[in-house]
Image (cartoon, rainbow, N blue to C red; front, side, top):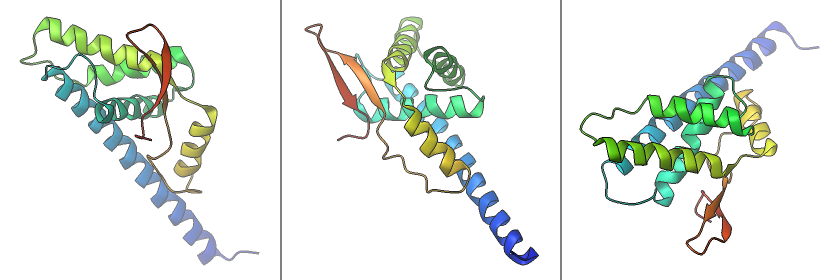
Length: 156
């Protein structure tokens, strides 16, 4: 049987890991908003891989923050809308803001977030695993030819 000092130590460890996870969620959201702003201020027609990765993790983080299921398309769209609400559109033309929001929603729609990914993140939140952003988020990306391919956002 565990004594009070051991139980207290385990409890504190779990709380520290939960706090680290909250900070990671905040960082993913901040990075996602920054990537959206970088795209909005640029001349590209679509997100670069690093930007897309940051936006995808931002969407997942917003889903966690609001208790949404990022594996569900409708709830993931809600998370994307919450992420877009955090963007300051000051100095961005209406057409570029609309294009940026459209590209963000398209990226969201293309995301395939698995239950396994969510289980791993929840284990991390519960203090039973480390947090890694190297877990692949898979997107379906339309090619100009109309075919589709899967794109891993972790760069592999």
